[in-house]
Image 1 (tube, rainbow, N blue to C red):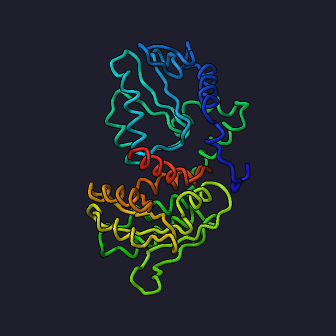
Image 2 (spheres, rainbow, N blue to C red):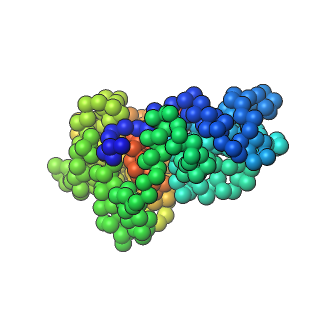
Length: 323
C-alpha cells in the first residue's frame, strides 16, 4: 500500500457496501449466527443487521460516515433509543473513530455498544485479512499502523496547551500548525497576525484559498471564502458575542472574503451563537466554531487517509439546517 496515496478508504465503503461487507464478515465468524440484513425487528423501525453474537441477540445500525458532529451523534442516539427496551443488544457500527469527548458521552449509554474502526478490527481481524474487498482491506490496513504519527504529535501538543490568555501565543501556533498539516497544499500556508491597511484589524491566521477543485472550491464560490480567516481564542471560559462581532469585522466581500473560523477551547455562549446567526442572515458572513474535539476529529480523518474537510462541511450543514 502506498502510504501517501490520496485515497479515502472510508468514503469508498459507501452506504450499502459497508453494511454488506460487515454482514458477510459476521457470517464467516464463528461467534455469529442467524445473520439477517435489513431485518424488521422492532415495530415499524428497521435495523441494518440482526444476528446472534455469542448467544446474545444483537441489532446493528451501520453508519458509513467516519466521523460525527455532536449534533449528528445526538441524532443517531435518538434514532437508536427506540430499541432500548427491547431484548436485543444495540450496536452502532461505523468505519471511523469518535473523539474522546464523544466516547465519554456514549459510555453513559449502557444500552449501546459501539463498533468503531478499532473494535471492528479486533472482532473481525481474520475475516478482514481473508476479504476479497480491496476497499475494506485498505481501510483496516491503515488502522493497523500503530506507530505515532504527525497527527498524534499535533494532538498531544493541543491537549498539553493550557487554556487561558497567558498561553494564547502557543495556542495560536498550534492551531496554525494543525491547519497547515491538514489543508496544505490545497490552501496556502498560514499567514500569522496580518493587519489590514489601517491596522485596525489583526487577523490571527489567514490561509489563501486558490483551490480549483473539491470542497474548498465550493466554499470559495458559495461563501466567498477567498481566504480562510481563523481567530484563535484560548479562553478558559466560553467565548461571547464580542468574539463573533470581532470576526465579522474582519470579513469583507471586497477584502479577504466572507468566511471565518473561530478556534476555541470550550463551547460558545448562547449570545455568541445568536450573533453568529444574526450576522449570517443580515450580512451573509458565515462564521463557524471549531473546538478541540473538532481538531481531534480532523486529525483522525487525516491519519486514516480521509478528508479532514468533512468536519467543516458537517459544521456548516448543521448550522444552516438549524436555522
